[in-house]
Image (cartoon, rainbow, N blue to C red; front, top):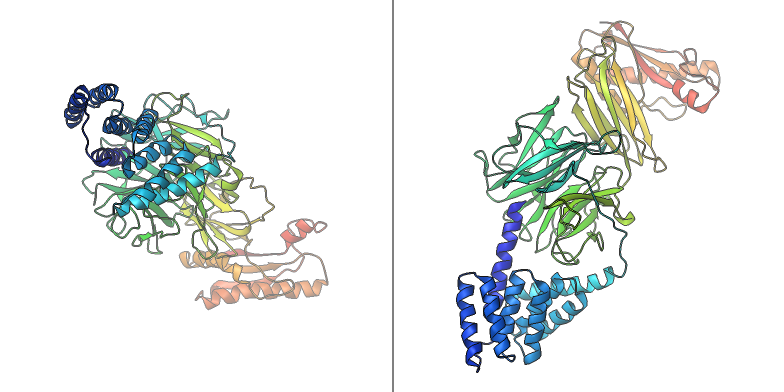
Length: 637
């Protein structure tokens, strides 16, 4: 955001002027014209008339080619103006005249680093470190960091990644500044920040049938205001927008984190996440996990490791956000970390940093969450995606193939534009897929407000839970590959829908598209419980069945007038009498679970049907699997 840029420029200005005043022991030229022009330059510098200062310093150096201080100050002013090539030339002339103060070598190395001359930068940083006699620990800390950057970069540029950034085009990008792209998991909607006449607002574009982006329009009058909004994170289903709002009446600091929920085709009025999350410091750049339960963000609040750190807060069962926790030295450094993005896989975190070894300024890194919940060592995404310039604000598509970021490139439309590129293989997230669908009333075909839940049956983690909208009934749930998931949809006054997705590592990740028709509660209504599990020829409920049983229990508790019959079924393999007995025992296991959880016995019954009521042919493995099922039927409403 603009605040970051302004802070950075102030830091650069202070650093440059500091070096200018301390670079060498004060000296005067023996050539009167040189000394006179040098003094003219000092007055121009005091007035911040840098062009006039450059002209005077050039005339001083021309009059006295041995005037070392004139060349040093020329380098400092060019460095301040980011003309690094001319700054480098001036510093080299200065150190070539006679022995120079160590800090001149630091300034020389700094401009070489900023222009990608890593080999020479590393050499001159080392000269500074060897000859510096001062006690500025911060300066020495930076020097050690920059030497690591140079050593890393010399190796990195020898193994470049394939990289061809593609401008998203005139439908998205304009002469103004576009940045911080956020994409829904299905890739159909892009929300980004745009600054027009100094005001930051959100815009949205949709991907059409021809894979072209529609003309971007303001997101919503509910969210966009005369104040600045930016640095947003959209939940994978596109229903929740976390963003940064600055200088607002309900704010706790200069910038706070806010949340808005999509309601039909518009958005609800945003609300501040509150004092539990926001502080009197700068809180910005949120990134929400795919299950919506963890929010990562950037803050310079007390208790961090550096200037700006990555923090996280978690949503508890009561719907309250926890006290933010610093991500610690696994991610944060004594320098700055920015622009986090947690991929829909929930395990891969992308962020920018100027603290980990990189190619200069801010680089993009990624880290994998380990099995114990800790973060792996950050990995630089590589050259030439990262350069000696600033790279921030990366987001990655759900399929892991594309990265999106903002930059000022030659083929742009003006200021910063949004680009996409093919993500390097090593930087790709874990594979995922998603289920996208609509919930309707079976009879009227009207959209329904239904609770949709996806649970990882291996870990018992709820990966998605939300309510569909009455306006369009839509939902989108992300599911990482490599596990089995229970999927349920339930609405008041309706039988619930049950499904099961077995997503092995061999799966292609092809999205599931479903249209769910919920049946109103009525006598005779029947539901197959697809997530009730038993071992072969056993009737003890397996732990993975708890999710489905909880949904059935919730239905019985919410509708106290209904009675049901639990029904067990098998395929036709084996002895019919044995199948009949097993199906009865399995039905009773579900019956016993409900009784144990205080469902009145008079509302329940159970029956085993063996293989007598198939729902598929028994001549295939798939058909037999469908026939091995537990279901329930409403006997009274």
